[in-house]
Image 1 (cartoon, rainbow, N blue to C red):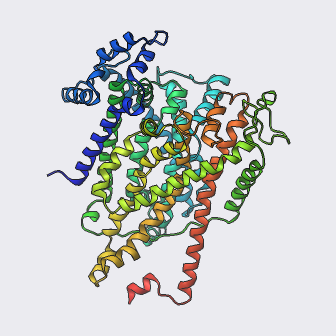
Image 2: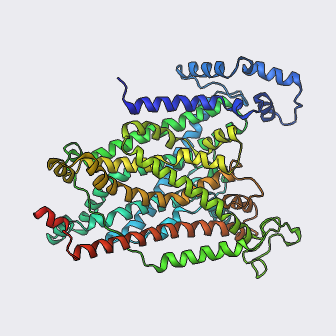
Image 3: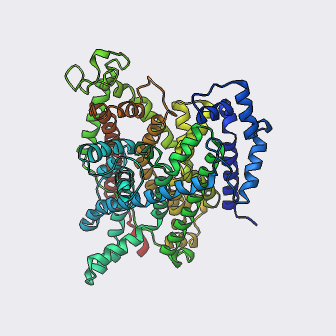
Length: 584
């Protein structure tokens, strides 16, 4: 009998493949016309030419017949023939996947090195920080990093090639652009969990016994990594399937760029093969991450012998969120007082001045005004998507066998593909982009919540609670939820800028907010073409996203630290401590 996770995975996979197969009909565009334009832009779209293409591709038989024929060939290892080039799809998919896997490995190496640099101070000092710097790194737009790296290291200095894929040197700049934000995210997650482990009694005993700092650090990392291993796996998959914008900037022939090109030309066989390859990669990576996590936990998970580290709030100086909030609110408020839509072609690409504090864009519009007026849609939409993902992940964390299958499929699917499918139904825009990101934003949080729920339920403390007759509702509301909700909420806050970046990426590719909307992602896209002449137009929304990330994380750390201090005051006033309760 199939497991719930396997059944859910199969249903989601079948639904996704069917949705991709119905894409031309969902979009309302004539697939014959799109294929004709992709084959030859100069050929006239006569009724005869369109009829010949329909007969050649079998479009007259309908979408269900085409989908059935493709599925039948899939069982024979045949992914079909490209509608545009007429070549076999399988070699193209394998070639694109090989390129993307190489880029993924290089980017993951950059991410791990950066994460180690962010975690090292925590291991040395034994205490964490608010993590604002790591959050700012995680909020850097990948396609903006790619553009800046291309200009500085490729064009101005001439150190590295700027496009193509012909050797190891071609992967350096794309790997840096992809690895820096991922490293900021992974480093922040590990650094957030380490202080509580380093405060445990066994660390003090080991140090007192003369155990080396390296062995203590290795043991602390082994203890803190199991709930985070799924995040590393998801980051690896995201680096492969979510690198469409970076692959576009550097003209890298990866699987993500292949899928995007196939979707634009409605080359169904190539699109279906690319999506299937991405899904297979996600499923394999998810299975490996689960295996590594179980090996790290060992028999303690099976025997309900886990002991969870006591939560230790990380203090944040109140000046950090205050300063960040003041800068961000001042810029947004000042921008709201100005007109974001006035076009002045005589004032194109002006440098910052008192008349235009952040300069002007390619149409002479005031950048500060567009930054301020775009804050509501950018921050509001990202916050709504983040909240929906948090609530869904907390609910699904208690149903890991059901949620894991859907999580694997959702995590393996690039936001671009989801954006294409949603845009085909509801049209491009902010609402469609938000829906596409919301459909894919919950797997990382859900995996984190499920891992924590599993470990909390297997802890010795809860075993004692059950032994003294505590009700399941009491255990759920007083122990399980508080132990899970805090870390997952901090994780969700850390992902808020990433959600904003996902929305920006869809706008960058024409699937999100449409001009002249002053949305921050669209501002990045509009300014990319002249970033060398007017970098301020691109830096303004990028710095705003970084400030938003630093503000969210430092404010959450300050609030958590205040809560910890209030709890200690209550303990000093006479409330029994955990140790006193155990002693009684």
